Length: 170
Length: 106
Image (tube, rainbow over all chains, first blue to last red; front, top):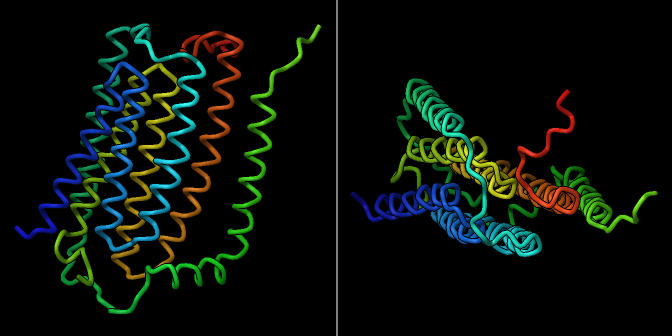
């Protein structure tokens, strides 16, 4: 086993375990913390791919912005107590069974459909540094890039409008 | 270290993404706290992003990574709007238990 494979298994174990703990843990704050660890390990996977810019953007956007939003919302709603009413056990059992079935079916599909990969391509040229990504982003994907900014603007206005306190309508 | 996939293998990344995606689906089905469901959706998006990057490395092409940027922008917008909706639901119902939201059920 090479070192990279060991690192991969270690990161994957962290990713899957923390993703599971996010769902299992009763306290929403603990879920958020586990989710941060999960995002950091996914960023580790990106670093393993040598996609440095993507890893940094991932950490900034997910672990920075999105998790701060989650934690703020949890604190705003004062949910940091474990007062969630339990679902019926039949619903939980159905959820577990469907999880197992989905996992089984998707893994079976991918194992059966796995193409035989004789050799991986290695062009040797740089395709994922910031330089190349910026050129691709602003040449071929210029219009989607602008639309993404419009989307963010619309989302910002929508969020402000939604979370504004309404005057009582009477 | 030119192509990481030579060491690790494409199939390992596919299995990891599939398992991560299934954990996200499980979270949406299992919990009734709307915030945890949002977190599960984030986990699913992350699984797909990871697979995008893996295939982008497999094809030695930057387009997959560019798509991940757009998906991140959409995820950020989605979370912001979703959490604002949750806050306004919480103001009206005083809980975010999704089983209380059945006004549209006939």
